[in-house]
Image 1: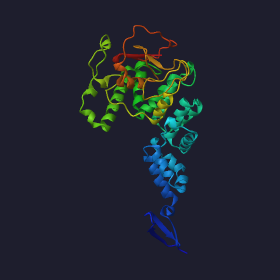
Image 2 (image 1 turned 90 degrees about the horizontal axis):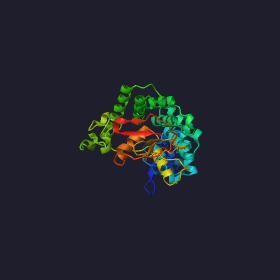
Image 3 (image 1 turned 180 degrees about the horizontal axis):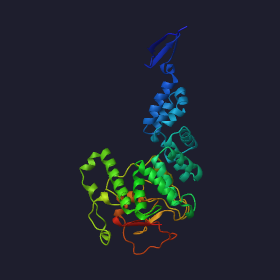
Image 4 (image 1 turned 180 degrees about the vertical axis):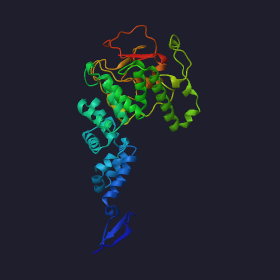
Length: 356
């Protein structure tokens, strides 16, 4: 027997279907695969968690299908970009469901939260590695930072060669921070055989890619000529540092707007903004990073002023352009509270050197 279906409208104007003389919501007549496709599209284009949650809370059917692995695997980073003040067991569980569904962004985000915020080092690193295996460039670079710093372990747990290998993979995928980090490693012979010309090539490539990214999103940057100027501070205009020069050839690149931080970095920044770290531990001085030290003297410090410290050269470069170059002043004397280790982190071209 074939059931006849007749479309009509309810008193509220919502489409309904008549099946064998019984009225029902037209959504109930759609096959699950079509509803899953629609929900996956909604999740992949969501600009905030509310966009996705409001759809799931519409009815019981959408709520059930909304946690299907097909939908969660397609969810955009902003769909699960929960704020640190709203962090709860339910948000943790939702991120876990997304990562279990194969969402690499969720794997990376939850991995960063577990590693740095919840101090579950093993689980966090495993989740980031899961994303890295799927060629997720930010995850590859974050694992490289962990290897360079020996994060979560002792000073002897540093693996510079592994850090360089991870950086090289992320750089191959076009990650700007990884390109810059790899360039400095090659210039300084840090974890790899020194090759100054090749290191300079990677730095120029990072600067050019950074500039192209900004100009492709904000063409108005062409109107201002400030992005192609480079003016060292007065106390840096002597010796090995001369100016003006082309910022594309510098260690820090052009004076372009700061890139939008990854949602995981936003979470870290907000999480630690109102928390007191253990004695002797410091946060990375770059405002868009949020990474904390996992042991004393883990990060590198500016050897000019001694007032800032960074988890990586990428954070150093961004913070120098955005803020520190206007504040950095030659200190008469500052006591080295570190362990005396030299990370080979010199950047004489731009007058800033960072030491551990």
